[in-house]
Length: 242
Image (cartoon, rainbow, N blue to C red; front, side, top):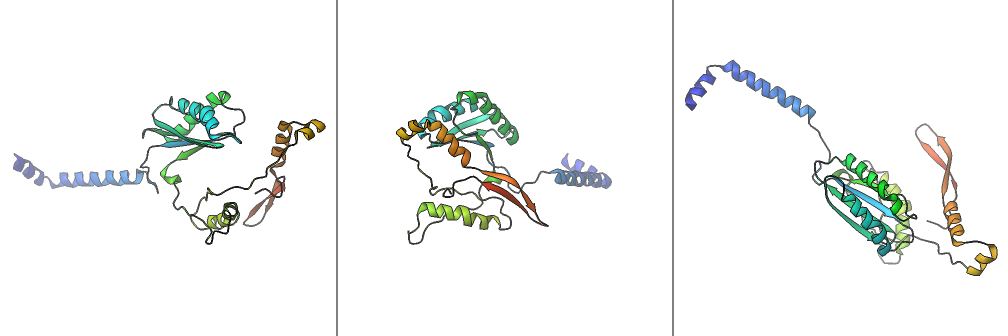
């Protein structure tokens, strides 16, 4: 039976040539239309939400921010799991979706979910940051910086990385972004005298608002050259702040 089919095919070489030509043609079209990525997706689509509350403790953030956001994200379609990490002043909630979920659509769904419960979250939180997590956004290299003889404070190491090394790394060919984490950030502690507040008719809220208003840089224009463009800013930050 099999031999008879083979003999029939051999008697029709043009038919075989036509099939081979058709397969080659379809293969060429498929190859041209095939999606190509530098970093093919191998993990589940994931969205990370970063919510900051200046001065908030980890316990307060977990109860008032992380838990409500997790519960709301669990109601979204095609969610596999939701988990969070909470430290002082920062809550990171991550939602993992099924493979069938488009990453852009997942980000849109998360944004809508946050807007839905925004009124029930603490009023002093900063606007939530939504990040798409994929193979393309994963760090290619992680560099640890330390003092060779331990005579450099962590605040100075972070300032060196933030103000000097980051600018040098980001100039390298092929580098799209450089993130700094770890170390300590310098801060200014203001001790308020309650008697002086009452004397001048001030409140803690008024002082906080004034500090936030003064702690900004304002863009006032650009200087454009042949190949470069420089942003001009009017400094509003305190000189000692990093």
